[in-house]
Image (cartoon, rainbow, N blue to C red; front, side, top):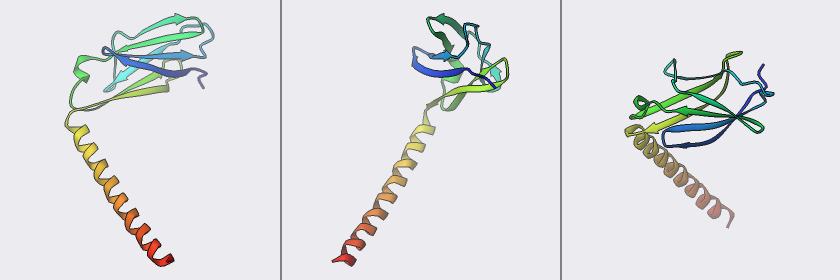
Length: 121
């Protein structure tokens, strides 16, 4: 079992950045996978008390749909983390569905609250 930890820093200019802790001064063996293929150009650099991880998002991953990247500890093949990009029609449809669900639940709660108020008067 790995002692490594991963914390997201940011996604900026097409590069996902994170911080790896728990490596005890030894550069961790990190792999990033997208569609079961390794992502090229991943960089790990030493910082005072940990390691910085930079993952360039491949241009072909910037497209409609849901795109998930897995960050793996290569020494024991355990998942350290992941990040997901969402774009295009999938998001619009998903958000519309969520809003509709929230509206339906709110209407249900309003009816139940009104019924409760009438019954307790």
